[in-house]
Length: 349
Length: 168
Ligand SMILES: [Zn+2]
Ligand SMILES: [Zn+2]
Image (cartoon, rainbow over all chains, first blue to last red):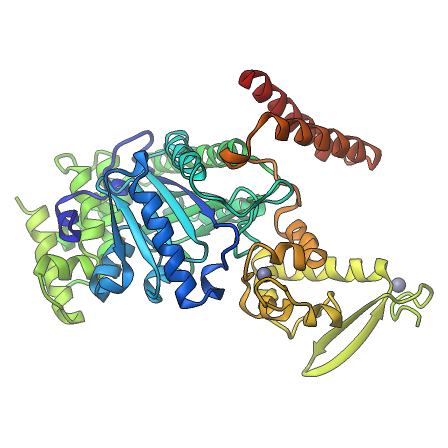
């Protein structure tokens, strides 16, 4: 697989399929694992980190569950390529920022991706469109089991999987969901919901992970506790919580339609109008307006617009994607123009 | 030396606190130290709890000997860990056990793994010893009247027994 092939492929988290895909963009399960007897990546010498990477590469390449994957050393990727993978949620910003002795392994369908030598030796991720944790966990669990037959993980029966940061010790598991919650934001009840979530030991972040703002009404919710509960409990806790958040969003949408229909329609149609006509547009403004258009499509205000087209736009308008589409580096002003052209070509038939 | 707060018990915990750029030494008994650290937790919340790992300005319940503590396998000191927020190797969990166990408890509300085990380790023998260990923990929890914990262990025990019978 070549990275450019991905341009013609809809990112798994933007497919708009799967249960509750009007509100839940994607469900992700991540496991952190380390090899016994090897220093954690940040503390290892370059030689040892390289060696770890090569051991993992060999084991991954002959694994039955990981047949359709491609291995990329980060040192071989240019900065646009790395940013491109971050935008597709296939690896973290931190991983991209220090490429030495690091690698990314990803499956053609973009469902499975593995970061090598990020904070831990292995950070494995399974991502599914919509609200589908059980399926994601099942795939993840199989991969983990089959790798554990060939690798000796750093593990203690008392503390579980031993990770570089104590926040991941135990199961090494993080489940996260990307939610689109425009109605809760408009109804101004989102703060209450987020406050309740953080009391339950879950964290909320924006579209692009740690430290990013919640633009476009996207919220990523993940579990904070990885020790003291088993994997099934962690999954069912997140499931229960997300089900409640979905219900709140659905209620807020119903109330908005009932009580503030004109206001809502106005915001949707204005957003649509600007997107179809703008000549220069920033990614932040685009994301905010696309959020309204997406809500409009969900609520049947915009009837003949395909949700998948809108979803795809969320990613195509990101800086690295624009540059990949154009085939060359673009400065910020050129990107704002290119962005507006792409949006027009997708929305104006 | 007597505790600075209650002035009755013997001070066993020594901590440094920086208030208005002035370093103050506090000598506390175990009980007052516990209360003090609980105070701080509520003040800072969980995110800051970890950020606090890297912040030497905050009070250090661990005391001075912790700073010099070193993992003999990877060479990382406990002070390094506090600065960078990452351990150096899996053996660090043994080397810094005394400080990591309470930290894990603060982060996760638990210091016991109930999740899966790597496949190579999952042999019937292992399960038996796991079950025995769980039973022991269960009794301890009941004696300490930690009923929520006891209920959890009972569930884990049931799951384990079920798994063991399926593997037969
Ligand atoms: Zn005292
Ligand atoms: Zn160590």
